Structure formats: structure tokens, C-alpha cells
Amino acid sequence: MKEKLLEKCFIGVDAGGTKTTIQAFTLNQQVITSIQLGVGSFANSLKEALHNIENGVRIVYNDVKNDYHVSYIVIGVSGLGAYSEVEKLHKEYEQQFNCPVEITSDTRVALYSITKGETSSGIIVLAGTGVAIFGQKGNQTQMIGGWGYLLHERGSAYAVVRNIILSAISHYEKGKPFTELEIALLNEMGVTQVADVKPLFYQQNHKEKIAQHAKFIKERAHQGDLQAVEELKQAGRDLAEQVHDCVNLLKLEPGTLLGHRGGFFTDGELIFQGFNEYLMKHDLHFTIVKPEANPIIGAYYLALEGYQKELKKL
Image (tube, rainbow, N blue to C red; front, side, top):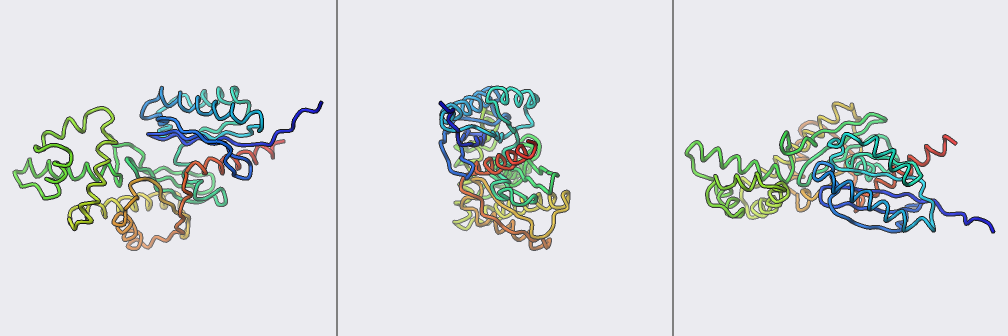
């Protein structure tokens, strides 16, 4: 009896700060199966993230192995730099799943969701709770941002809320009155005294909770609050300036692909307004690409690229 010839497939992982998505794809991009688990960022909860990623890949692998031959696995991880044993993990996964495995950043996966492997140049702007700009030109890559809120962060949902609180602290320490927005934000956060924000900013897992108040800033802007309008526009300008830095470092050409991802861009007309104002002021021109609905599709394109390289070695 002849052994069944199995169709080949890829497994892709998008491991972020709040959830980990694992999908199996056919070679022509059809989704075979998909699951979602909890936190996947190495920077948030390393032990839990490692468990969710390995467990998720194993579940999907076991789900497809009787009908498909898994030929390549791509794992895109948020906070990849926070883990010092990636190479060891890479070898363990290749032994466990008996196929080539690529562990990379979630920003690279997001970039491939717009370039689709068709060009070697592009920039992806990721703005949610945090922010990161990732660019590529040929084999050269560049990350701008991604330092995290403790070091340096501009243009994120968290940063917008933090900046308004910093303004309130400055007014308090100079004996000046709070602005209407500062008073409204303090009330929204459930405090009446500016000193009471300290526990909110220093409690565990505070970052996501603080960032959620960016929605309130957007609401105030829609109601005509000029400070809120300016803060959101400035966030857009901050993001565009970081894109500019990426262009300069990689020496990218005009017309390079540019995409945006992240919840901060939702209902973000003013953010885009500030972003585009900066681009026009500095004569920066891009081909704007609307990313696929799910960033994990970037893992498919990375897997396809890696698989084709493996075939050339044969």
C-alpha cells in the first residue's frame, strides 16, 4: 500500500501583547485552521507567552498533520528582544516540529502583510497601546520606536494620555489652573487630585488601562476641545517624524510602500491629519497600502518566501 502523499502547508503565528493567533495555511493562502490564545509578547509575560506560542503551534500542528505536511513555520513575536535565548528556542522548535522554523518580530510580520513579499522595500507604522515603525530595504531592516513606555515612546495611545497628565502635573507644580481637558481626563480616570494618578501609573499592567483613555481624548476632540485636537495631531506628526527617520536611515526611495496598523488609528482622522501634514511639509511621498484585515497574513508571505528559499537548496 502506497503512503499517502500529503499536501504541503505553513503555520503562522502572530504573538502580541494581548493575544496569540495561530493559523495553518495551504500554499495558495487558504486558511485550514485557526486558534487564538492569550498573551504572546515576550516583554509582557515571558513564561506565559512561551507556553501559549508552543502550545498553540502544537495544537494546530496536530490538527493538520494527518492531512498536510507542515513545510514551514513562521513565528512573529512582540517584544522579541526581551528574550535572550531565541536561537535555542529556534532549534527546539525545528526538532519538535521537524521542519524549518523562523522566529522573527511581529513588526516584520506586519510589514509583510503590506509588501506581500512582492517588494523588498516598505515601512509599517504600528500604533496601539505602544508604537513601533519597521522598515526594510533589501536585506537591511530598521526599527524606529519600540523602546517601550519606560524609555521613549511617541505617537501611541498611551503617550497621548501620558502627555496630558504631564501637562496637568506641570500646571499643578507651577500653581496654574488645569485646562478643561485635564480636568475632564482626571475625572474620566476616577480621580480628583492630580497626585492620585500615581497609583494608576505604577500599578501592574497599567499601560493598557492608561492607553484605553485615548478613546476619551478622541471623543473630546470631536466635541471641539482644541487641546485634544492638537494632542492627536501631534501624535500623527510624531509618528510621521519617526517614519522620516526610518526613510533617512534606510535611504528609501520616494514611492516606497507605507502601511498603518493598530487600534490607535481607529477613529483617527486627526492623527492622520497631523501625519499627512508632516509628510507634506517635508516633501515625503509614499505609496499608501491598506493592510490586509488580519496581520497574520504576513506570516504566510514570510513562510512562502522561506519555503521557496529552502527549495532552491535542494
